[in-house]
Length: 113
Image (cartoon, rainbow, N blue to C red; front, side, top):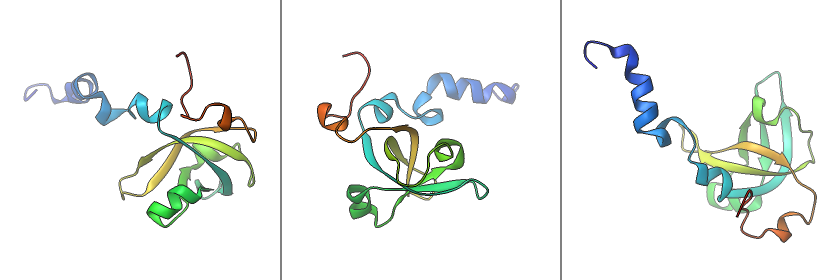
């Protein structure tokens, strides 16, 4: 690696995928639900209101515009959540849900099972 530092990112990605990609369990098993509160596409961000997360962190959940831009305020959503570099909750893999859908799948898991 000393002689070919350009391969370091590829090695890290292969050997430590949880450092370069969100763990699959965060996407499938640790989903939360909330309501899109605000979207500021020109500013590059938006927020999701989720009382359970707000109770823990004292704030709404941040979402990058690439994740939230297709939704409008008031949309019910399901999302995966991780802490960002500032240790604040950030949503990704945001999906619109219909009221009552989450109740039929109480563990928040999806996919084959």
